[in-house]
Image (cartoon, rainbow, N blue to C red):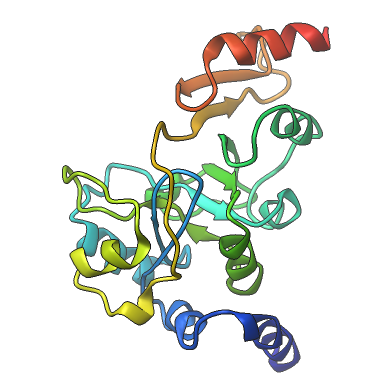
Length: 213
């Protein structure tokens, strides 16, 4: 266990001092994504308690997880072979996939069905390669207008500057949220169900699906 921690800390040398330590202590951080700053914490009960209180978010509203790769996602969810195909067909970070959890997680993460997004921002992927998956909910109090600068987002949430991985995001539509239809469900006539349209339209996903048949 100590060897694994040491290897992770060696990878973290290019990251701001203290940000990895904050995560490991169960504290929230801000990091950049392809749309807006994300509020990140470990997918653990006490860390989620702090995040939901800070964001003033209803516990009935599920948060997604950011990962650095599908391989990392496989630690948490069952990843079908087709997942790499659909992610490869669209810009990185444009899709969030709801997949079956390997074991039941906190209900605020979806319980048995967890939303994961392979992040587009290189520094965010570098961070999460060290910390493991982090929540990827937007870093703004619920109902407030979002900002695009991570350090400003931290200030609004009254977090220290050291809690932010510096970066500015481009804003715009969120990722498109789609659910994998588990194989064997006779009621489903397609591999994916669209839950929320965002950066990728329903028409684009349908066109991709038709090209595969």
